[in-house]
Amino acid sequence: MLRDKIFQIDKTDVERLAAEYGSPLLVLSLEQVKKNYELLKKHMPRVQVHYAIKANPHPEILRVMKEMGSCFDVASDGEIHTLHDMGVEGERLIYANPVKTGVGLKACNDCGVHKMTFDSYTEIAKIQAACPGTTVLLRLRIDNSSAHVDLNKKFGAARENALDLMLKAKAAGLDMAGIAFHVGSQTVSAEPYLQALDIARELFEEAKAVGLELRILDIGGGFPIPEPSVKFNLPEMLQQINARLDEDFADVEIWSEPGRYICGTAVNLITSVIGVTERGGQPWYFLDEGLYGTFSGVIFDQWDFKLISFKEGDERIAATFAGPSCDSLDIMFRGRMTAPLEVGDLLLVPSCGAYTSASATTFNGFSRARFVLWEEVRGSVE
Image (cartoon, rainbow, N blue to C red):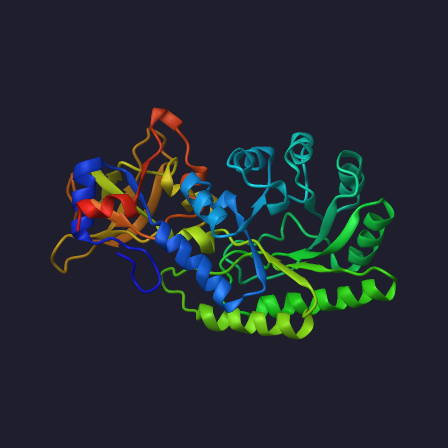
């Protein structure tokens, strides 16, 4: 079913899908993907969405986003070729990795990608040599300690170097078109965006004063999805950002690069308890999915997944949850409160569509979790 803000199937759905398809099983709702995209466009109508496919490059998500008119944020030759092979025109892609590989730049030439970000002097010469005259945006460093994942530790030019970098890019022959920033993942208030927009406005004015007319502003991603114990009002947040964009950047083309926001709430995981033991006075539950699979987001995304048990009764115990591999690092949660579980019990993990299957591996010979589309299978459970 599609609940108010997220896609979440119920106990009957879980049991019937597990019986038919087995577990671990990922259930993807394309309706939720569309709903997320439409909400963003409703409150920020001028924004040209560039879906960050690293969050989840499932072909059906890419197909739906393509059909809805989305552009795409890519970071590698692999991502460029994936979209090119689907018939996505290069003009709909931005190579938004500030440090590019040689094969990535070659893919841009091969596939007609002419928009990029950069944040250093060395990148200017590299881009101009490989892709002369490319349209570039300067990636600006924005400090935001409240972000779930700080995306400015590795990338982003310092404010004091920004104008000189832009002038050097123009002098090198690149189409120096604008500024990009990313306030960090899972940002739950408009304030970091508004602060970043203040800095961007200053730089637009400074650039104009020296004869550089900027025309594009990329506000990145970071729009939040629901998670335990975190409160926010997304429509209000988007409206605040949009009002500032209309006020300060009325004649500027606005881009964004959402990833988690588009796909995070669109996938549910069904996983089974395959082993039960006790270690150190605490029960351990072994699941058929672990850190090397969908729960890779525990490590790479620092995400606190919600585990839903359908066991009846009020008893709750602290338990450790581990994955199926023989690696002792394959432990997802310690001291997690849960109903007592048994081998064969099913658990539901909602909102696991971002930075999960995308970083899953086949370590130890375990297959990646299978995907099914909710819109195709729900008839069998309703």
